[in-house]
Image (cartoon, rainbow, N blue to C red; front, top):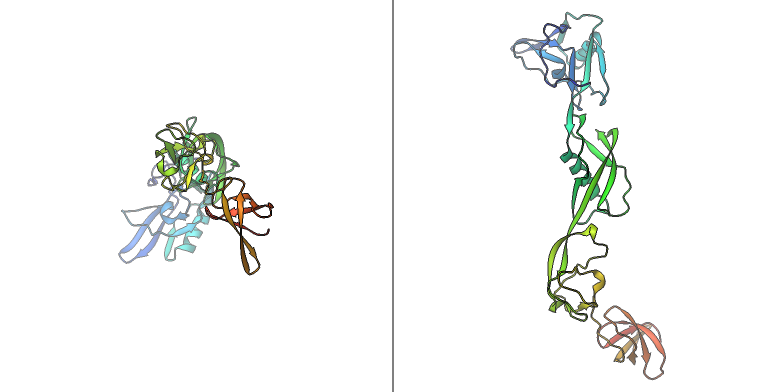
Length: 320
């Protein structure tokens, strides 16, 4: 049940339920009790319950808690007068009429599509699936405006999100002051915008990054099914392991650190044996970049081992 948020003075057609007085420095202030009123979520105040006489100011006194959304609360005149007397000392109440009710309801407002999208976006951003990039949401079907409690609302997404998708149906709960009052759903289109490297010219396999033509472009990462490369194009330690056509995205799999040792090269293997550091000459059996593990062969014993590439001349192994 919704009523006007503006309190009109009780007149012909409304019961004059009571007049009460409060002592002020300037004299007595008279107020007329209303029969119906709407309140927001932070409580029922004296100013919600009465109309002043002769433009008198109404003290901001909290009389009771607000009713839950959708609930109609009724007070008898005696009950409400008792609450007012208990909260507002110095107020004298006269002229009460027994057997009449005062009705209190929550004030309402319209929940529009922009607010719903903003709330849903905020909830999705906090998820690990959509936490990186610039998230955009739009409805796939028009949103039907809802009447909701006046004041701030919270949205809790109920749909379990395991992976990024470009469109889905989201079930969500609306909460008023932490209290849920309804479950709704909306079909949405989702975009997750990121800056990605794109080849502006043809790139051939084996080209180092610093000699490649790349630029940043904004792409919808949800539509990209592979991991994007996000390194530094000026880093000469890396090169391309595959050909890339102009205008194509650069994926993570396309870039690797340039090998510093090649199959057939001779290098020094460094072996740690307790406090001692022993070195021996080895033959490299496969290409390797710094940090990679490659197979090597002891030049003297022909024994094969594996070791970590440190640089173009050194490979670290743990045991012979």
